Every structure is written in C-alpha cells, then in structure tokens.
Image 1 (cartoon, rainbow, N blue to C red):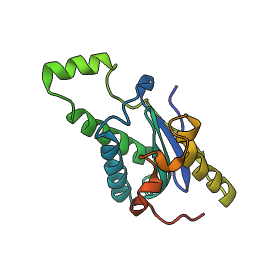
Image 2: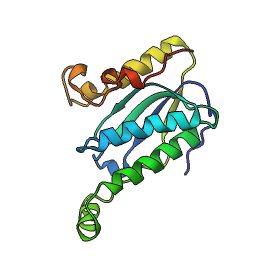
Image 3: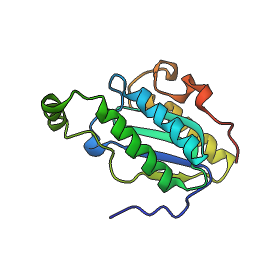
Image 4: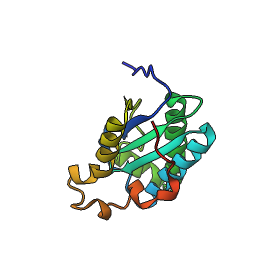
Length: 161
C-alpha cells in the first residue's frame, strides 16, 4: 500500500531505504553522487538541509522540503540520484551482470517521515541521524563515519523551528 504523507512542509526527519536492503549507498563514488543530488534538489525546490547521514542501505535527512513539498522533493532526489548512480556502472553486458547480481540498484518505494514539532524533537532527530553509524556498529566514534553531515557543514542550512 502506498504511503500517504499528509504533511508536506515544515521540518521533517526522512528515512529512505534501498530496495531489498542492497547496501549500495556507500560504494566508492556513490556517497558523493547522493550528496550532490541532495544539494541540487534543495536548490531546485528552495528547501533546507539541516543534517544527513548516508549508510550502506539507507539514508537519513533532516530537512524542510521547500515550496513543492516532501513528496516532490524526495521523488526528485531519488529519481535523479538513481539515474546518476546507474550511469557510473560499467556499460552493457558487464552492467547487466552486476545489476542482476545485486538485484539492481534502486531506492525502495516511498520513504518514512517524522514531523518535527519542537526543539526537543528536532534535537532528538538530529542526534539520531548523527549517531546512526554507531547504532549500526559501523564505527565507534561519529567522527570516523565519512558520510555524515558533520563533515560537510557547508552543505547545511541554519536550523530553526
């Protein structure tokens, strides 16, 4: 059943997963593609990005999606990032073998959202995003996870509620 996102604007914590949990988000060159697409989508939709974390099989984003809403923002981000990721795969025959082996590279349909209503909830969502690599036993110190927004402050907007 398709997800319904009744709230389209304001500050939201978004979680988006890869299809079938295939851990392609942190393969060489892909995090940069995801970050570039996140920034481009923010600019296109006049949105704001407050935090993000790219993990092997999913991504967390704390954002305000801008004037067209969260559904349009995420559809654009996922569609464009998927195209860019697939374009870096080897051509034709080899590409088919790689894609078949990995059940293809796609985002799961839809996404999960949490509406941020106050500063406490915002701070909790921020901490959840930043500390997620530790929760998944990927690192023991958040500074050691390379695909967290803590290393890319120039990509972030000032937080507000």
